[in-house]
Each structure stands twice: as structure tokens, then as C-alpha cells.
Image 1 (cartoon, rainbow, N blue to C red):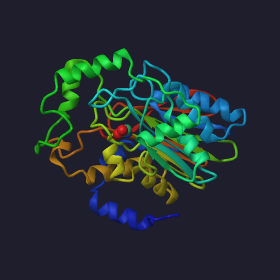
Image 2 (cartoon, protein in one colour):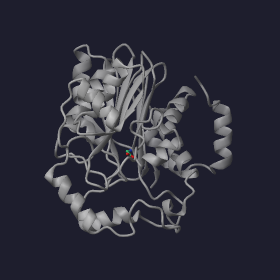
Image 3 (cartoon, rainbow, N blue to C red):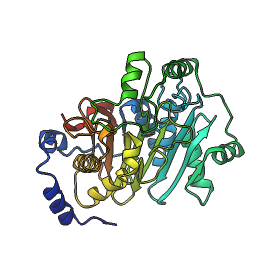
Image 4 (cartoon, protein in one colour):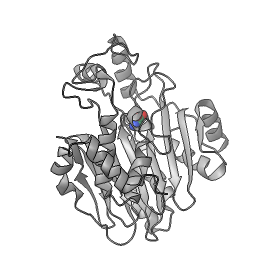
Length: 353
Ligand code: GLY
């Protein structure tokens, strides 16, 4: 389904975007990259163990969607990773609420859970929603009850380390909370600055993992504990199909980490896949969506004094032929890839140096 005509898009882009300097400076990252024949997977940088597990599982015959869900489970279950699952940073009231989704390319079926509590591996619950229901998204208590009905255990997900960070946050809380109360350009989110000053984590967390098997079938998932110290009930992009993840089996898959609000309001992952359908290299598709997000960020408090977004977002894309790419809003990020021969990290292309 090519919803965006390539010529129209490029003409519109050329009119609104003088000539993306970052697209030019990132051109080396746009060189086509091909995987070895056979299963492969890409992930956000925190997913080295996920891509390795996913490739192993696909080699043993697992479907790509099962492979990615079990790949990210390693990180979801790790109490030392504070961005997803057990050990994730809690919300404003000290409760860990998790978001996750999974999508099966051949069936074009998705499953997702949002703001689920007490379940360590929400991506596995998303997979159950995908396989065992006619629905796509279950939220909150309903998602938890569904998980319990399928034999998942209710557990306390708040580790002492995450609790200590949250307490420090609470003790130092001031106007820098999630309620909008400012209207000026700022270099850095004051909540981020406060967390840095306190030496505690503050992030949008998240692992995305996409996998391709030897038949050219694709599966993907994204999982997160979401924005640190968020307003209870806040749902990010990770469980939203088309925002934090999207698969179109005949084209490829895409996923996102970073500021979920920007990815929901851009349908970021859906846009990436449509750009690939229109012939863009995965890296180019990711850069175009980052530029789209930048062009549509209007609130002053989300822009620095150069008029650029002051938040982070990193996008990942995997094409059906094994070509892949990733791009980030601002310098320094990497992503994980297992190309069928080894797992390694590669640098993301960058929109703003
Ligand atoms: N990207 C994760 C979140 O915003 O919750």
C-alpha cells in the first residue's frame, strides 16, 4: 500500500526542506547494507542480546515475531536494565507501568498492551493478544487480568535501585514536572537537567527489535517502561501500532525509541515503512521521518534556540531484502544488528550534528 506518492513527497520535501544538511552529512550511513543470506535482526543499542537470541531462534525454526519477543525478554527480565520490564523506572507515583507491542508480518496481525502493571514480560503478553484474541490493544487492569488468565505471574517490578531513583525524584520535585507550564525555547528538558543534577536515570527507555527470516518474513516488537516518572496512565508510542513499531511484510518493518509523543503524532514507524515502499533506503526513510517530526514540532519548550527539537528520537528500519538502517535526531547513537554472521553495533545516521 503506497499511501505517499514518491514524486509528490519528494517535491513537497524539497519545497519545505531547503536541502537537508544532515542528510548530506549522513550520506555515508546511507550506503546500502546487505545481510548475509538467512535470518537477521536489528535492534536499538540495548538489544545486543535480543538480536543474538532472535537469530538463534529463527535458525531453529521459530517465526520472526516469536524470535523478537523472546529476544527482548532477556532485557525485560534483567533488573539492571532500567528502561524496560523488571527494574524499569516507575511512574510519578512509584508504580512500574509497561507498554509493549508485537507484530507478525505474514498474518499482518498485531498485539499490544499499555500501562500494564506487575507483569515482567509485557511483550509476551502482547504476543498472546496477537495470537489469542481478535483485538490489538489491551490496557491497564484488563491487560493484567488477561495476562494472569494466560498464566503470567503477578510480580513486584520495582527494584530497590529504581525505587531509590524515584524517591530522589519525588524529593526534588518542583515546577519541572509533566504539567505544561512554560513557553520559552530551552536547550534541554528541565526534567532531564534535574535528573542529571541528581545523578538518577531519566529516559524514554525502550527496546525495539525487528527480524527477518530466510523466507523473507518479518516480525517485530517494541517494549518499554516508558518515560521515567510519567503521569500515571501515560502511554507512549511503544504499544501504538504505526508509532513505535510497524510491519508490512511485503516491504519491511520499522520501530522507534525516544520521545513517544513525537512518534505518536507523526505515525513515525508507519511513515518509515511507506517511504521504503516508495523506494527509499531504510536510513533515508528514518531521516525523512525525523525531519518530518522536527518540522512539526511547534511548542517552544520542545525547541532549542536554533529551532531544532531538544528531545531525542531514534528510528530503525529493516527492509524485506535485508537492507537496514537507523537514524537519530542528534549525534552519538548506535544500534544493534545481527546480520546472520555476528552481532555488532553500528552508528546511526544523524539529523542534527
Ligand atoms: N518511546 C517510549 C516512550 O515514549 O514511552
